[in-house]
Image (cartoon, rainbow, N blue to C red):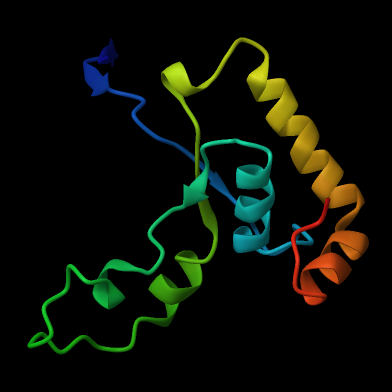
Length: 116
């Protein structure tokens, strides 16, 4: 589905959420919790393209520290038909829960399991 606004076209294909440095859990921990709750979320650009299988072995890539850092911060959230009305509120509540219970969640991950 494409939309036009002010002469620009938008398709709203992805909804990316940035997990910034102030969020108390890592992007990967948040994705694991989301997936454990049956949300179709995934790490976005992980690994970054220059480290992925799509980058041929014969291409030498420089160190890209900013790319490496950014590749650890984005979640591709579910969109479209994978959401029911009200699911966005449930997902927001889940992020608040993760924020508010981060110490216990980190402890559970350190013990080698997903928090229940």
